[in-house]
Amino acid sequence: MNALRAYDINIVGLENKRYEYDFTSDDAFFAALEQELIRKGNVQTHVVLDKSETMIRLDFHIVGTVEQICDRSLDEYDEPVDTRQMMLLKFGDHNEELSDEIELIERNTATVNVARYIFEFISLSLPMKRLHPRFRDEEEQDDQDDESNIKLIYSSGPVMDDEDEENEKPATDPRWDALRNLNNN
Image (cartoon, rainbow, N blue to C red; front, side, top):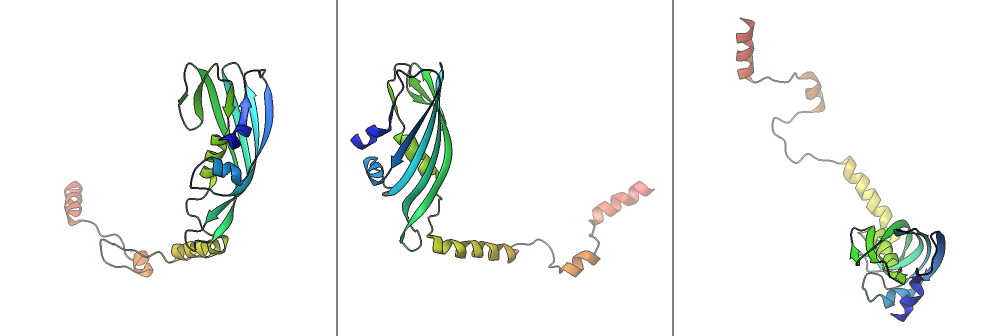
């Protein structure tokens, strides 16, 4: 956990104004978090801290690459990361996570460790389907081919060609015709 001490921001003596911090996260950062999603990477994080009487606003800009394993070939590749996120820390009586972007922290909190936020924002920016870049062109082409070859699986009614649809008037239900005859009388 000592590798994550570098991500502590001392908020006790800060005046109510804007501060900027820069963090570099490498393999030691991802190893210290004891997780399985990302093993290696190199990302730069720029954090803008805006402190007021009632809350702290943290704006993150994270840029870099993380190593991923392709779901298709099991080859390792570098996935680019470029994300901007915001986090609000409101002062309160206890610690509680109110939503994804808002947390309550105790008023007497001395430091805020931003390592967890950086990791979460990196994780959220990664694609669900991890494909090596050499397979992405194939995947995009397959998606385009699928859209152009859309086939109808189920139809209720007779099969019609495009020419038949233009020439044929919609057939009406005979019950409606009987009702229209009553109206004409």
